Each structure stands twice: as C-alpha cells, then as structure tokens.
Image (cartoon, rainbow, N blue to C red; front, side, top):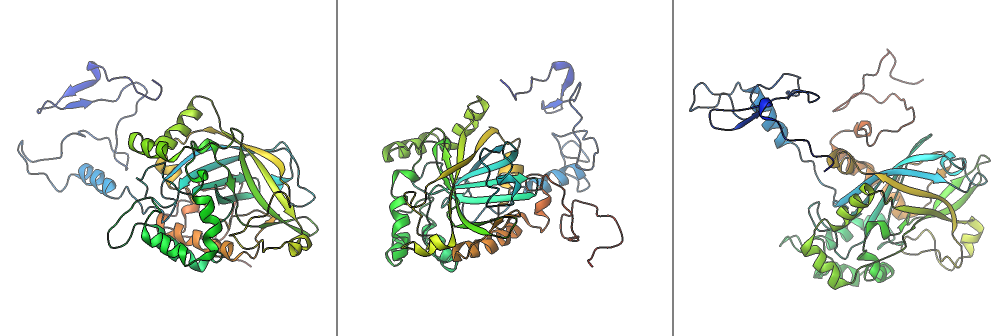
Length: 414
C-alpha cells in the first residue's frame, strides 16, 4: 500500500535488555536526531545511572521529546474547528477585465494555486462530520498579486445582520455552558431561544433545516461568498459582485436517518470521502459564477443587498460562470496545512474591494484577531500554507517566531 514503509530487516535492528526493538537507519533513511541535529542513541529508554534507575535530569533527549509533545496542540478555532482540506487550482475561463483590474479575474487561462478548507461550524475539532450544520467553504487563492481569501459557507445567507451579534449567536448554538452538551448540534434550548428572539434569523433557519446542511459529500456542496463585494477597474469604477461556487457533481444530501447512522459508523465520513476521491484521481470540481449589479440597480431592489440575511435572486441578477476550481492534491500534513491555515476576508488583491455590509466589516477585524490567538504570533503569515507565492516585502519586523532574517540598516519609511 502506498505510503507504508517496508518493515525493518533483522540486520538493521537490535533488541535491548528489556527485549525492546531498536531500529537503525540505513539506506535512504536518515538517522533519528534531536531538533538540534544530534543523533539519538536510544529512543526507547531514558538515561539512568544504573539498570533500575532513577531517570537523570540531564537526559536532554527525553526532555526535548516530552516538552515538544506537551506543546503539540494549539487552541482550536472558536467556530469551524472541524475541517478537511485539499490543494488545487483555479482557472479563469471568462475575463472580467471590464469590471476589475484583478489579474486573477481578468487573465483567461491562468491557473492560480488554491487551498480549500471545508468545515462544520458548531462542533469541536473531534466532532462528527455529518451533523445538521452549515458547512464552511473557504478558498485561499495564491494569486500573482498576493493572497485572496474568499471565506464563505455552503448557504448564501447568514443568521444575523450585524457582527456585534455574532458572539451571542455562537454562544447560543455551542454546547450549553453549565452542562457542556450537546456537541455539534443546534437542537437545544439556548439556540432556539436566540432564534425565537431574532426574527432576522428566520431566512437562514429555513436553509439550516433543509437538506443543504446534511450533505452527502463535501464534493457535492455549493459555496457562497455570502456578502456583496466590489470589483474595481483601472478607471476606478466599481460594480457590486456576489460569488458562487457550484459543484460539477451537483448537489446531493443524505436524509436524517442516514446522517445519524453514518455518524455512528464513521465519524470521518466526509473527510475520508474527500481524501479517497482525490487519491483515486476523481478530482472534485466547482464552477465559479458571479452576480454583477450596479449601485443604481441595487437602489431599485426591494431589499438591502448589504444585509447578509438576504440573497439576490438569480431571477433578478443571473449568474455568469467565469471559471473553474479543481482540487487535485491532498495535504501532506494535516496539522501543518489544514489546522494552521489562516483565512481572513480582509485578504483581497487590487481590483477587489469590500462593501459596507456590517457583518462583513466585523469579519474583517475578527479573523485577523483570532489568528493571533490561535497561532500565537503576528508572524503566522510566514507559515508555508499561509505565505504568498508572489514576492512580498515590508518593514514589519521581529515578534515571536520570526522565521525570516531581514537584512539592511533601514526598517522604516520614508
């Protein structure tokens, strides 16, 4: 089976005094070392002054190994903690050069690397894949002009109109604070108490109680930017845009009895399905479509398009397909990529801008703030999964876990 190393031969292994196996590196396998590059002589026994102990404090191999193990976990996301992800590319098929100067949306045929993370919302990192829940649909596009993060959901609207209500919404839907349950479920009193007192949430609840929130596969969900954004062209003229990801496999859902049975039989059902499909060469694909409308058109709508609890009907503003996204590579390491990836709606490139949607405005602050808490350093953008693939340079220096060595005498401007 691919990825499984062959068993160590008898000639490259020895047994210790307790009968434990000591493997020795050979051939293409490098020797086991500490993080300082020092070869480890014994990875099975701690250092002792005699056969029966005690363990010596000077055993730096033991200390380093235990210390690192004790600090392997980082704070999980407040919401969207349970996620699965994949690498791929976005290819533009229809240019929007008339409306935007963003090269990723104007240069037909260019393939832009992407990393996409799907997630549930309410449950923790160890919860099941198949609860009745909204699914996060976050796309990081590593464009030639910098990273563009399109951070959305598989539902086109949201529960609330203003970000100031977001902590209350999440407190209500999470497990109840006095009893610590239910996990990953909205079927409890605090959530429905909040909903009953928030009429604006009714539209989203209709979606949440539909088949959209018990999908059969992550390869069969839509994605939405939810908010109205702006596209800006070289002349400084802007137009409103809403983004839609549409799966080539179409929309498919389970029924509730199936979802419950799957949760009991395979908690990793969606994660496994995505991984195995990509490994088998059955690469999931989505079309990217947009709704474009002017400020004058928006003024004539019988609703406020800057209200995230509303959608713009496709009968009113039809979709225009402009590209496709293909996911064709699984992460090499779940923690380094899927867990450490940091999305932020504020990451946009020239030619893409924000609207005055108050929910979006709050997200522009919150995502950056939460990454500092979760990843522990303002230098989280230097992690390989977060770093732009285009050149970048500035005078932001120092901080915990600085991984670059800026050169030169000047660290200011002008």
